[in-house]
Image 1 (spheres, one colour):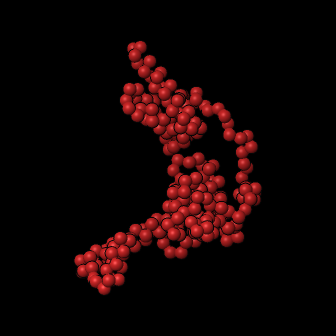
Image 2: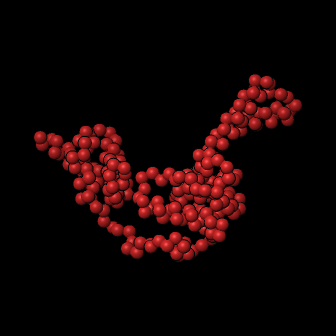
Image 3: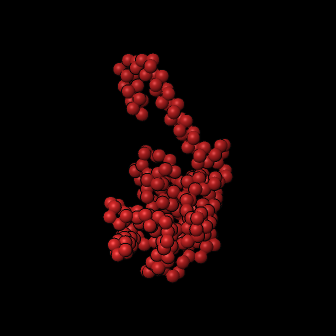
Length: 230
């Protein structure tokens, strides 16, 4: 974009930018085109976008992935309710059905606008704070044939189960309670041991960061007391 501005300013004043600068500009344009082509291939593959690509969800529960795939199948139908967002000028922009076929389609449901910006077209370099669907939640639930949770969010965390997953874990033995940033290290360790992964099938609900940090402080204090008593 900077090269285009310089090139346009020079052309406006009837001047040239020289052969070397022209070659550099063409090379930059070629690089940008290659990046765009690679991104398109990564997201949707080659040819017309008429089939979903293998999704990337990370360490997610199978039931969650299956429900999300049902949702994207539903929204990707030609007869599905319209999905849209608003740009900076307040213009309603449609979310094309092909966006539900990309490998990173899960980012469309992120609460963070910058995540959604990765997979939405840059209309005016502005991305919506929210994506809307012309349908009531009950309608979508009926269409997906999923059973919503009726028990509400549980208030208690299974701290005992968290501790059991950490007992005799080698990484915990090497933790230095006096080291800077060790609380965050233990927090990450708890998350990795509680969330399902290829190594284990644990599925323990982890507290939010504030409570998790307090829990990690208690663990570090216990480690410090036990080691000083030896």
